[in-house]
View 1 (cartoon, helix red, strand yellow):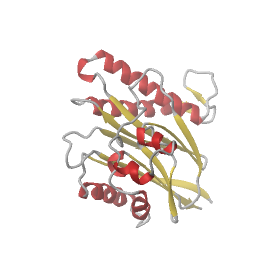
View 2 (cartoon, one colour):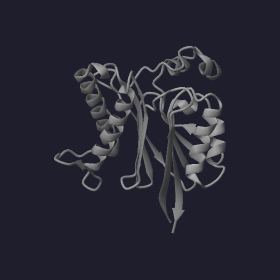
View 3 (tube, helix red, strand yellow):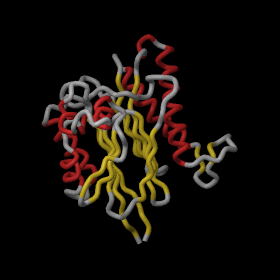
View 4 (cartoon, one colour):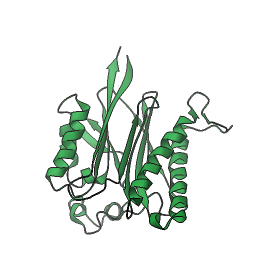
Length: 254
């Protein structure tokens, strides 16, 4: 029995914002899944997040999983290496675009990117968009937020409950477009039949708890309906930000 993967995604502008600056992709053919949360005036945030997503698709489309090489290169690269290349290239492109136009100055985006291959899920992230491993009996945040409150929690200066209401809870310490050199975190998960993965922006996690996410994720097998319910719940609680969810399900098939 092998593993197959099903996926669905959904994004919504929310109830306050006029523009949806989130972007996502679910490319089953590549096993590639991306969520990005843009920031910046005018349409700059939207352009930054879209650039991050399209760059990830472009890089992995040029990667040969058998030879472990990018098109035009003789260097052996593992999937984690390619995740870092994709995020760093996106960072470079966003910075270059920001320099080239006064309307795009200061734009940036978070990004969480996942690649499914050989019964493993490889994740890379910059910022506070998250990737979770969800099982029937619990939920675990795999990615680590690059944020002020995460640093404070790591230092033992505030509790999890205090972090939820901290005045700096939405201040990130790392994003694409922030600086020329960017550090990328990567993670590798060994998957089991029945596992589900949630990738999302903070428009969801600021309003829906991890425990609620875990509950909703296993309510039924309709992945699209689950994504829409998560988004609807965030909107019912104010929807003060754009909300994006990508849900992956690991099925056992003969």
